[in-house]
Amino acid sequence: MPLVGWIKSGGTFSGRPLLLKRSLQSVEDNFFFADRQVTLVRESVASGKTVSRRDTKGWSGVSDGRDVRLPPENAAKQAAEHRESFMHLNFGRTILAGVAMAAMLGAAVVPVEAATLRMAWAQDATGLDPHKQTAFSSLRLLELVYEPLVRLDAKYNVVPAIATSWEFSADGLTLTFKLDPNAKFSTGESVTSADVKASYERLLDEATAAAARANFLSIKSIDTPDPQTAVFNLSQPDAPILVAMSGTNASIVPASAIADGSIGTKAIGSGPFKLDEWDPNVKDVLSANPNWAGGKTGVDGITISVLPSESAIIDSMRSNQTDFALFNDPLVATLIPGEPGMTLNRIPGLAYNVLQMNPARPPMDNLKVRQAISCAVNRQEVIDTALVGEGKVTGPLTMEAYASDPSTLFCYKQDVEKAKALMKEAGQEAGFSVDVIAATGEPPYAANEAQVLQSQLAAIGVKLNIKTMDLKVYVDTWLKGDFDMAVAQNGGRPDPYPMYNRYFTKDGNLVNVSNFTDPELDSLLQQGRVETDPAKRKPIFQQFEARLAEQAPWVWISSTVTYTANLDSVKNYEINPSGLLFSLSKATVGQ
Image (cartoon, rainbow, N blue to C red; front, side):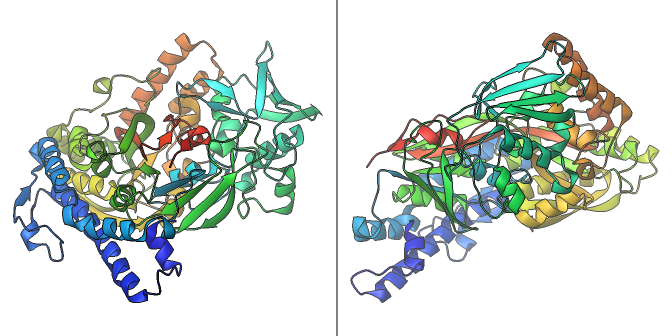
């Protein structure tokens, strides 16, 4: 248990509650001060204003009085310089009290158990139903507990999970899976074809509101000739269906749990771990699933502490309270390589940062207005300023196999004069005001992106009113499509069809999020879906990408970078953009 969590839970030491109270205040203050440092750096990066440490009340151990000025036109260089300066500070005296306290209490207070991995993140899961969750934090937790039929390896190849083998019929209309006879849920019950059938019928039931439902509409029926065989009968050839089946949103759940309505209140899966405790925004406790068909896990359990910020996570790792952590904030993550005894694992991901417009609401229902906004955005400046240079400008497709060169897409080079001309043609020369929503915590830089976009769009008379929301509130609002604009980070897939059909086809189950359909986009997605030759699929999806960028329902900004970090005592963890935390199933931790 992390130090602060142990004290808050009522721990005692040598009968000296006053000492603990003072130490707790010191540790919490240090978390605050570290947080405040990062926050002020962010504010200076986003706004270009001067931030004086000398004028920042309450900063502990920082009294050099230097000013930090980060003008947007030189943001990348200045941000890098400030990160270096920030690392030299090394949170200096601000962490001293926490380290001293950890040393004072020692193993008697926080015993280090080699068989338990102590993990931390700053954003907890928002729910436990694997078929309905869309927040990255939820999917990360659930990928440790549940398994799909197949999964993707680090190179996006489809590999076995619950299914050991699969085969398409010659006409592509039948897909047969053979299940692992050793696959069992954490209750000890075998995973059978009846569970597979019940899971997919639940996914396809509109009443479930499953996040990935649109990816499986080609499924007509499912036969179960024996407990280890599931036969999917398809209405048409469906080349990307295996990729769609590899996600956590396609997890196999017990038929009995579907029947008794416990999905979402209990987490019973066949994955490497079982969830023993979920205390939202406090901690999650997992233990090894002794029935996992994948064999013995590298640790006996994982305890996940939900800390107030990612800078607090670094403090926790410094004081040896956390072995492994998940990071979303590049400003914090890029500090880790300078930390002794820590390793930063960094890998480009398929997720993307995007400004979503709502074309169902005026004036975003006007194509020329949407195009004007796209032309007014300087995507590289958003990356350099809000993401401290981490990530690349991207079009809608983030997978290398299908993506076009972004420079070939509509208005991907900022053109303010063209944007103004389009606004005039749309009858919006005077501009307008709209609200843009942004989540706190996922990603941590969403509000900063919104601030940069606010500054850029002001040049064409578009006033953005930024509304920040708690992640759960944001997700609920986003799923309803109840916004003018939204700064979002959406998940990518190695195949364009399951990535976008749910948003941009007439049958898409997330069409309420995009509020946009287009017959040409719909047709191109369907063509790519039934075509099995990769060489023929690529030009189809590149046409789709070009059309989507031109119609501009959203403004795609950048690809993402995925980060984890671990102490040197953690071994055998391999970062995988598709199964980021599943790789912990074989990780070990030493003393």
